[in-house]
Length: 149
Image (tube, rainbow, N blue to C red):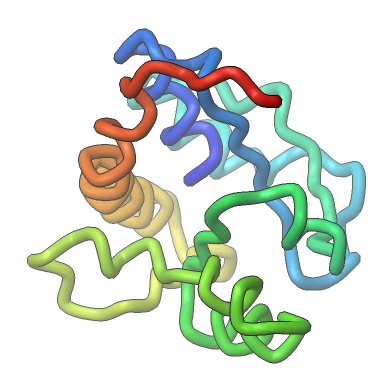
């Protein structure tokens, strides 16, 4: 959900070409699979298209490929920080809900064993926090690009 929401927001703000957003799990349970139908349905109800999403796994190379690594709960955050090989990699890891000043928790709940309403509630949490994250990143995204030597 978070990847789809963030990418949609960036595109709507005219900054889609300036970002790369990838979702990756910490395990290999569903590699190559589409998102859960309930996730796709929740996204569609809010006007998002999650049909292109396929499960990928986070690897050590993911640290080098990303400027920011956003975890959805503290367990994943802890795992990612433990996998980091240095302070720079560890410093890239943050929690999505830390960008929502009104969040009641720092963990996005996993709606997998819940009903449709939980998928919608989780999507709402993700949308709010993603807007907060985007507000922080937007000035850098809008800054003129400097040519690489």
